[in-house]
Length: 386
Image: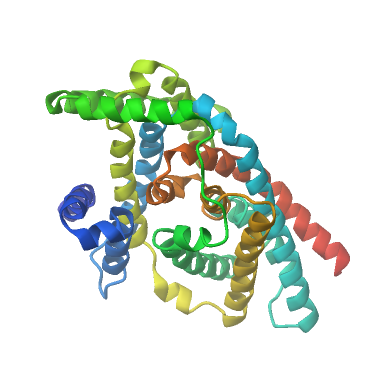
């Protein structure tokens, strides 16, 4: 590995530690939060003229951090307690899917009838449903299935990245406060859940510092083993390194490990997972290139913006009508628009670990159903507007 690449990896691993210490000592930095600080620094450095960032390396490191972080955060999961929230989560995600279906069809119909200069809008309607139900892999899969050109895909993906980046900034800063203005607060279901959380926190505080390092090393070993096993699972089932299959394996095995009480009560595993998510945030910020986005077709940008904003507005409106709490609405929105990778950072900002499993589960469901919904939408639109 070239010396410059080694330095970049070391900076990506070390800078989040510095941020964590700064947040502890500086009140203003604490208000901003470590997630948005790492994301912002990566964004600034990555968009500097003649930036030294190796974007492919940042992409690789970021992708490697996600399954490891998810596993560590799930080791302390109280899965049986999560089941109490499953019905509310499923309802919220269903509303998110309804929102994107309505928004995509309505916006596509308007652009088609008004002849706004967006070609093959019926194909774009399906791709929008796919990307905002599952993620970029679904966008690519549906585009390939419908025979979309590479040029259109690049422009569409660039517009989506720009809007998603803006929404992510809101999610990591003021989204929860705004949502709480008109949506109920998240409330733990039972006193038992709060008691176990209190017991867990007490145990963490009582653990001697000299034992924490050994415990974290044990947790890292368990999670690394889970990630390796999940990669093997993905290769065996799909024949390739499929991200959804890896995430499914990591989620399943990590939840299974959490049923072992000694594993579930290992100190600081959730916080350790958050550290790896900070590395991810810094990396993902450094590869967000706004130059490509600014060069995107204005008509396509307008189209994607209308679908994106319409989806969010409808989802939050439906959540208000059906009285879905703010945290569940936000995490299912993240699951649909970003997929499982961003569940951890947003849950961390929301200060709600009970919704991590909910977000991951709905994100995986989104991956699974997005291609069906997207292709179905495209064909429906083509039939209605031949």
